[in-house]
Amino acid sequence: MAWVTYIITIPDYSFFSKPRTKDTVRKSGGIGFFVKKSILQDIEIVKSENEYIFWLKINIENNKYFALGAVYVPPEMSRFYSEDDFFQLENEISDKSNTYENILILGDFNAHTSNLPDYTEIDEFLYRHFDISENSSETIGNKAILIECNIPINRISLCSKTNKLGRKLLNICKENDLLIHNGRLFNDRNGQFTFRNASVINYS
Image 1: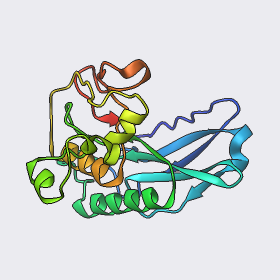
Image 2: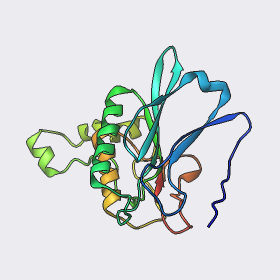
Image 3: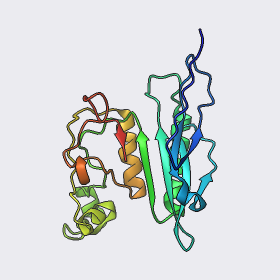
Image 4: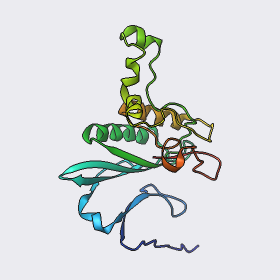
């Protein structure tokens, strides 16, 4: 069987890729970015051994950087999925959250989150043991960011499915003060499907 190779080019853009290193039956796998040539001087690739993410460091102004990560997490039942790799991914996201003031992560997580909260909810245990009032609970963690920026607290999603990867993604958000864009902003306020008009597995 002969393989057909397609080369995708976009005028005025350069392509940076991170091919999959594990053997595949068919030619597939990998993640990458198209970067506008006019900003190449402000872009730096951040080294990562993790198969699931490809990082760029972007100089916004005066050496003020933010981290941009492209993600592909294989489905849990895939032979390419690894609990160890996902644990390393969690650690990398935590490290970048502590290193950079702002990070943006986008891609295919194969995660179903429905409209479950991506912020920490204060329950009766926390109210009682940490002397938190109901009013002050609104100013804690990433929920406070939503309120401050006048962004809807609760996401909307047309997908009602949840799975293990979805719960892992929500925990990553809660632990690192990250928020999911889907179902909240711009043209996705209604939580549109992202895969085959049947589910939401791609996030930013």
